[in-house]
Length: 155
Image 1 (cartoon, rainbow, N blue to C red):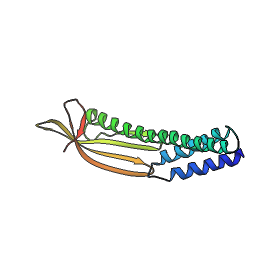
Image 2: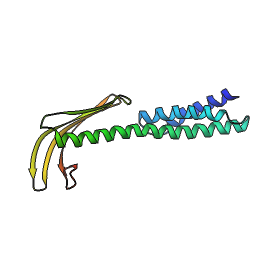
Image 3: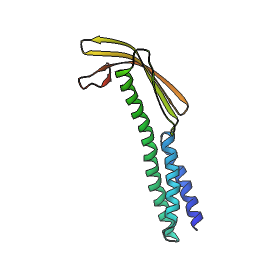
Image 4: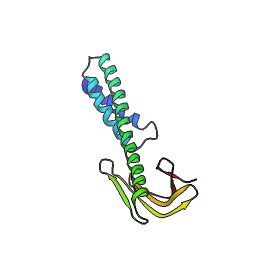
């Protein structure tokens, strides 16, 4: 009975991961968390109670695992943002600052291209590359230092 309950939980976890448009890390987290939740839930009770506990464990595990997967993506975004700030503040024009996360495989770089002054203060054009899930995206833009000392996208 426990094996059937765990298998049911695993199928439910895999099915849940395909219900919405999520990142790869979130999907993996949902499946792993759901399976672990199913195993934990299957240890509670027997018969119908065991099936309910397994389903509840699967759902809770999938939710927690998905949250962890999302935070990895958020961590990558935060790392990219911090790299942008450091590169724009400290790097010379043409000097690249890179980052990578071996846990997620994501990486990127920011290269200030040209510094100039406006009525609002110091601005810099830049080129940014982000590689995630094997896909590279490149962006060019202009950022200016605001009154708080942060670099923000120019309008």
